[in-house]
Amino acid sequence: MKIVPDLHSYDGELRLPRPSAAHIWNGEEWLFDTETAQRLLEFNKGKLCERIDTSADDARQALVRNPLHLAEYERAANEAEAFKSVDYTGTVPASVKSWADAKGWSARAAADDILAEATRWNVALYSIRDRRLKGKEAVRAASNEVAAQAAADATIADLQHIIAKTGYDPEVQV
Image (cartoon, rainbow, N blue to C red; front, side, top):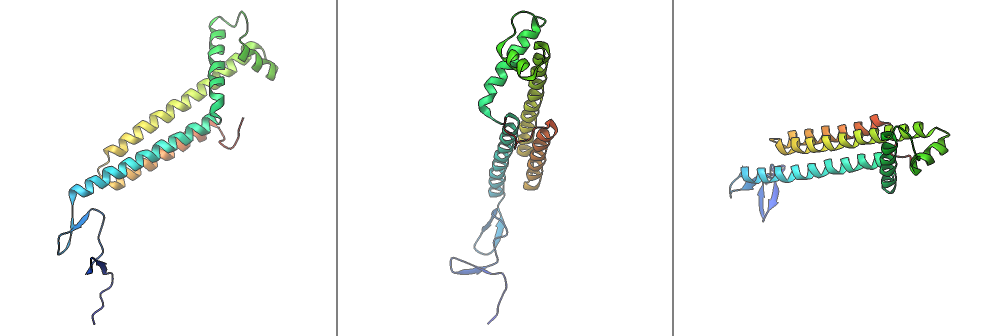
């Protein structure tokens, strides 16, 4: 009896293992199939793009923390901007007043602080969007699995870095 390592049984026949999912058996040997390889590459690129989207969602979640507060923060920013546009005169908008009262600040200081925070949020959100879109296109343009994986990994690391540099801590809920 002759023992040959690494043989696998396929339909009752012993063969060397399939080299990759892109190989097909022609009855005598495994042959690389370019069409299958391309379909697999496109499928895997789609999965990598989904990972990028998930990472961007995680980054936005870390930034926003509690999505229920988002409408409140947007309203405060709009009211602060309107108050600033009239040179901080007239009736102080409710969200500006509540922040000023809570912090013991002037209405102007509270409005400026609200606007600074809104700017920081917007910069981070635009950065997340920009990196997500560019990363997905880099994955789609990749000519092989290794390049696609490298593009996805770089994008995900960049998304994590965007949140890290904003100073937001996803573990802190406000």
